[in-house]
Amino acid sequence: MKLRIGCIPGDGIGPEIIRETGKVLERVADKYGHKLEYTEILMGGASIDVHGVPLTEEAIAAAKVSEAILMGSIGGDPATSPWYRLEPKRRPEAGLLRLRKELNLFANLRPAVLYPQLAGACPLKEEISSRGFDILIVRELTGGLYFGERKTIEENGRLKAIDTLTYTEDEIRRIAVKAFEVAMKRKKKVTSVDKANVLDSSRLWRKVTQEVASSYPEVELEHMLVDNCAMQLVKDPAQFDVILTENMFGDILSDEASMVTGSIGMLASASLNDSRFGLYEPSHGSAPDIAGKDMANPIATLLSAAMMLRYSFDLKQEAEDVERAVHAVLDKKYRTVDIMSEGCTPVGCSEMGSLLAAEI
Ligand code: NAD
Image (cartoon, rainbow, N blue to C red; front, side, top):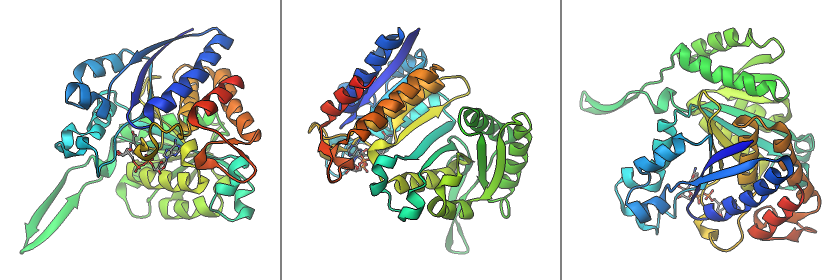
C-alpha cells in the first residue's frame, strides 16, 4: 500500500523526533510491504524564516493532497525567539490554527496511557496507579465557547465581558460518531462528559449522544458531569475507556489526564475531520530548551504515527507492532532523560529511535 504523508518537522525538537519516527516507520513499511511517500511541509518558525509567514498557501495545498499529516512540533521560546516579536497572526502558532481550520479538523483524540514500566512517574497513590489506565479523550475542537461570539461592553460605567457557548446538533452528532467509532476499536465504552444540570448546550449534547448510541448497541454509554469527571480522573482513572466531551471541558480534562500519566514525552494526539484524514502530533511542544541536544524523547511522536497508521490508513497490525516496540524498549529499561529512573540505561533521541526501529 502506498502511504502519502505530509510531513511537518517544525521547530525545536520537531525535526529530531520526526527523524527518529521516520526510522521506525521505514522498518514497518519494509516489513509489511508498504511504500512511504513523504511531502515535506514548512510550518511555524521554519516557514517564517523562509517565507516570512507561518504557513503559505502552497503548504496548505500540499497538506490537502496528503492522506495524513505527521507533525513534530512548532514554536520557539516566546521570551527569546524573534518569531514572537511579530504580530500575533504571523507567529508560529497561527500556522497551526489556520491549518486545523483549513482541514476542518473537528475531532481531537488524546490518549492518556499509564505504562506499567513508568508507573513510578505517576503522581497518584500506588493503590490507584497499580491498576494502570488507558484513556482516550475525544474532544470537539472547532465549536463551543472558544469559537462563540464574544465582546466586552460598558454597562452603567462598569465593564462586562460576554462569551457565548453554542453547539448545533450536527456538530455534536459528528463528534459523537467519531467517539463511538473509536470505542468500537477499543474497549467499547464511552463516557460522555457534560454539565447537563446547568447548561442547555449540555442537555442537547446528552440527547444527541444518546441518539447516536442507538446505532452502536455494542458500546456502553454513560453520562458524567464534568466536575465529577475531573475528580474521577484522579480517583479511579482505570474506569474510563473513551471520554467524549466538548471543546473547553476537553481542553481542561485532557491536560489533567496527561498530567496523571507523569510522562509528557510519551503522549500522542490526533486531530481528525469527517473523512479518514488526520493530523498527528505529540501532545508536547517544541521543547526549545533541549533542541539540538539529542535529548528529546521521540516516543510521543512515534505513538502519534501509530495512531496515523490505525485511523488514517486502517493498518491495525502495523500500529500494534509500533506500540509493541515501545513496550519492548521500555521493558529493556532504556530511557530518555524525561522518563529516566534508577536502574535504567540512559539513551539519547537518536539511539532511542534506533532501538525502537530494531524492535519492529
Ligand atoms: P514543551 O512541551 O515544549 O516543554 C515543556 C517541558 O517538557 C520542557 O522542559 C521540555 O524540555 C520538556 N519536553 C517536552 N517534550 C519533550 C520530549 N519529547 N522529550 C523530553 N522532554 C520534553 O512546552 P513549552 O516549553 O511550554 O513550549 C515550548 C514551545 O512549544 C512554545 O513555543 C509553545 O508555543 C510550543 N507548543 C507547540 C505545540 C504544538 O506544536 N502543537 C504544543 C504545545 C506547545
